[in-house]
Structures are given as C-alpha cells and as structure tokens.
Length: 413
Image (cartoon, rainbow, N blue to C red; front, side, top):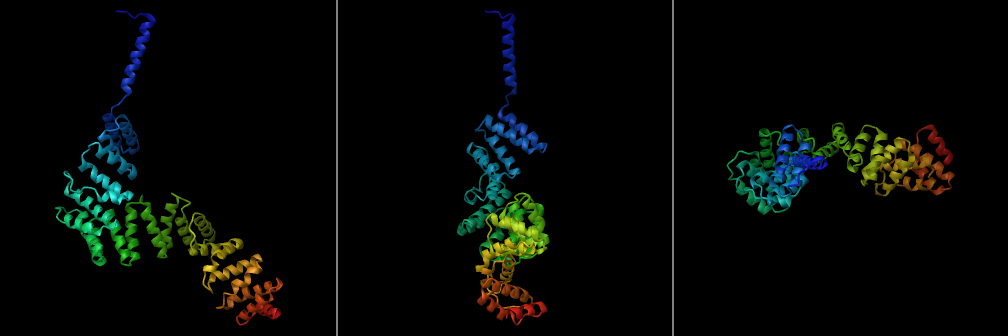
C-alpha cells in the first residue's frame, strides 16, 4: 500500500477537506422546507420563497416542496404562481384535501372560472366548512360561465352540508341572485354582513346587489368598507373611485385615485378620473395635464375632450383648446357651450376661416354672447367674409347691450 508523505499528503488532505465542505454545504429538499418554515415564523415570506425554490430545484418532483411554495404564494397573493405550484403538488401526489382550498383561492383570484368549476368539492378529507367555501366559488364560476342549470343543481347539493359557514349562507343567497330576486338577495346578504362584517365575498356581493338595485350610494359605502379591509385589491379600489366620481363625490374619490396613480401614473382611465376631479376643483392646469395623459393612453371620450378643451381655454392655451374642441365639434349638438369656447379660441388664434361655421350653429344666445359675436363679425369683415359677418350681425343685434358692443355693431352695420 502506497504511503503518502510530504507534498502528496498535503494534496490528499486538501481534497478531503474540500469534499467534506462540499458535502456540508449541500442541503436536502426537506432541509430547505424546514428552513422556509422557520422564515415564515419570523414573518419573512421573501426568504421563505427563496428557500422553497431551492427545495424545488433540489427535488423538482417533491410534492411537499411544491405544496409549501404554492401555499406561500397564496399568502403573498401571487396567485398565478400559486396555481402552477399547487397543481404540480397534486400531480406529484400531495394530499388533495390540503391543496384544493388553496387552489380554489388561486383560481378565484386569477379568474380561472373553468378550472374552478371542475374542482371536486366532495374530496375526501375536506371539512364541511371547506366544502361550503369551495362549493360557493364553484357556483359563482358556473354562473359566470353561463351554466346556470348546473349552478342551481350544485346549490341544492350544498344545502345538505352540516355547517354554519358564511359560505353556505352566500350560496343560498346566490340562488336568489340567479332567479333575479335581488330584493330578497339583498336582505339575505345584509344579514350575512352583520354576522361577518369583514368577509370579502359578503362585501363584494352586497355591493353588487346594491348596484343591481339601483342604489349606487349604498354600493359605494360597502365598497369603502371592503377597500378599508383589503386595500391591496386595486381593481375594487378603481371600481369605488369610478363610482364616487359618477356620484359627484370628487373629494371622496380623490384619495383612491391618487393611491392608484402611484402604482401606474400613465393609466388612461385613472387619469381621466383625476382630470374630472381636478376640473371640479377648478384646478385647470392639473385637469389639462391628466386629460392629455389619458388621451395619449387611449381614452378618447367626448367628455374627456371637453374637459381638456375647457381646461386649456381657462389656462389661456387657445391652441390646445382649439385642438381638443375641434376634434369633437362634429359630435356636439348645436348650441352646446363647447362650441362657444371653440369659437372664442379660434377668435383668439385668428382662425377666421373656421369662425363662421362654428358660430352659425349657435342660435340660442344671451347677452353674454354679444362680445363674442360682435368681435367675430369684425374679424370676419376684416378677412373678407362679408356674408358670414352679416349673418352674425343679424343674430347678435338683439342681444347687444353694452356701449362697446352697440358701437361695434353700429360700425359693422
């Protein structure tokens, strides 16, 4: 047997040490899972996810690792990632009764209604409470898939569950919704809110029933409760903000809009809401800024162009006012105030060619319109448009009251 001495002995010793160190640094999938659980106890979900990803990398077909990673993703509200991991956990043999309640949450939040409608709510090992919750979400999914007949059959099946779960009550109320009996459904869900005032599904269904019953103010109040408890739900926060703007409650809407704009400053519909709020507060600079952001991001509604045109005019940005109001002039009815603003902007810009056509659409005039018409007539004559000027002079003759307008009118005549 060869004996190692001197340099050879040192070389072999170094290799042994490196081998031992490499062996010590390699964790098993189970050890990574335990490490992740320790991180969760310390409320460090980010570190737990890293550890569980290492567990999956070490053993890709480890059902416990997939399940734990999916579970943490649900906690973190990363529902699309949760779907993937929880389905893998089922595929690799993890206990279905533990996976299905979490997978239901993931499907419900990603809108995977088809997949949710196929979850087996009678799976062995599920408690009556879990069956009631999964069953309710299945009913809602079937309804959204227009499979009302199957939804009603499932509702009847769920009535036999021996549980006082709020989801059993929601399922019974949803039966009334499917029959369009919104009045009694509203009564039933209002009672559930008294029992479970912070339940997300109770609050959302109650708000929707208020809307279906043409009670937007009451719906907004319920949505406020929901957003207070679930501020991370940006979609519902947007619904609330839009509803408040529609109700004219601009000051109440503004904090919700501002919080969402911090997430996405270029969001078209959010900027449209902010423009409407700003114009109501006579903050014309902000109104114009947000209206133009909304327009540049694909929102091109007549009301938004009106806001932009009016705000630009108030800011004495007559080029901007003309641009926005000209864009929608054809869609405005005769005598619309926007046409007067357009004409006034064109007058300021010296766009005499366009003036006559716009002012010819105005025939319901007041004393306040006299300066606009007399000045426009003067500019038309200067530009050589005598016939257009003559028509305007006839219109404005009976409304001129000030000495300046009467003098100008006399000179024009």
